[in-house]
Length: 137
Image 1 (cartoon, rainbow, N blue to C red):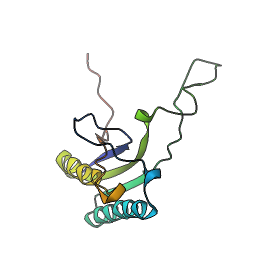
Image 2: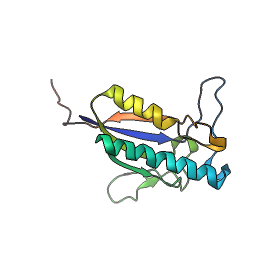
Image 3: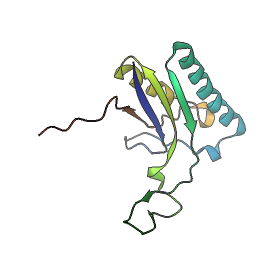
Image 4: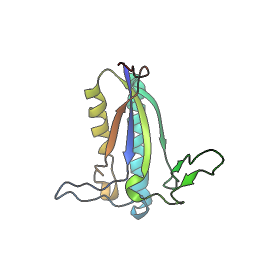
């Protein structure tokens, strides 16, 4: 078993003909409820198979921060990140293969949005490191 992080991005598609999904603040309460139910049902299914580790939704607010030297305050990019940088949430799965992680991400990407249509959101799938990288000369 290997752990993978699936990052849910607010990102428009660059594929010609793809339509961007409407932001959640444009959905009806019933559409939001259906989306959240899909997410919980998906997590429950993975709990039953032993593949679910954790998941969290994230607020759209955030600030990028970096170290700027001894005695200096951290540098920030301001209180509002650019839309392309927003991460909607994440899920950690523990699965038998990379292909299984990709399959699950594809299924998660199909969660319903406005008018019940799949939102086809982008998910980034990244494996957890099992040990620190080795440096050789």
